[in-house]
Length: 369
Image 1 (cartoon, rainbow, N blue to C red):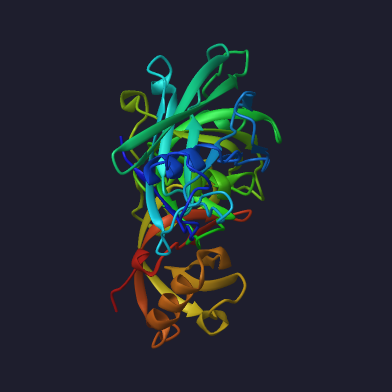
Image 2: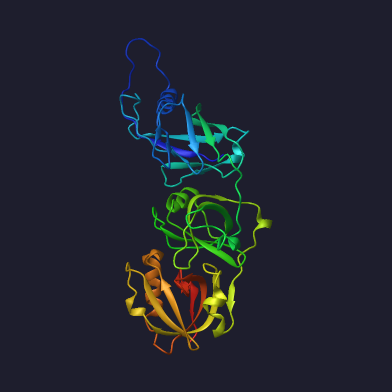
């Protein structure tokens, strides 16, 4: 079990009144920490849980944020230590339901731990969360009873390849896939642009609760995930607003991502590529035409024009990729010459009523001439 460090500045009140036996500093410290009420907060609603005699009720998709840094004033902790004390707390779920939880220390920031029930189909269950406070040679345990309300119905997983034409707009569904790319997030915000794929089929996750889900769980490219959310396609691009996302481990049931190879000009067409939006595509021999001058650091969406033989091909740079990616693309395109500069592209396939290229980083582009 990992440890979360708790730094508590404390200031001086050195003596106890009367002839009572002095209470050891270690006891004072762990007692003071154990009496802090709102160590847990509902990460979705912001509700603090100050009363440990109550049962904390969580619904599907909600997580807890556990405080890992507190300050105790001199009236609460009467210890003469002007430099502060360091307290460690270990968090654990009871053995019966421990497999149903993910505990991330230092997430979403250095002063909190994320406690997340995993996505399951079965009936409601109750867990006991224990926090063990340790200072010096002394430890003290505090605990919370947490009730998890599950769906009450079977969770049906729809393969990504069956979403289009099967799921209605705004209908909730669950699917699974490998994370293949993300638009550049900052430390608090990820609006759109997490792509997941099952074989040659893919879908983009955006909006919904994506920022909370992403930063609470610290997902990475290559992770296999199960996602629940509402279907929200946009001008032909298959999109989903997620409400839940969890690491999945049933690897045999999901095919690793497959690149779509464009071997000829004729293959870059709406007819040929319909149903493959959001997948990773490889296309060589794109000749730059125009648009690089529109790309600015911190600017809006930009379309860069190319030719593949006689076929027009758009490269759409979404501003949600962030300034670092925009600046890298600006540097890469600085000396491009219209009608001459030729590139290869290996990145995601976007869509706006027709196929387009969607770079998430400058590394998706290779200049060949």
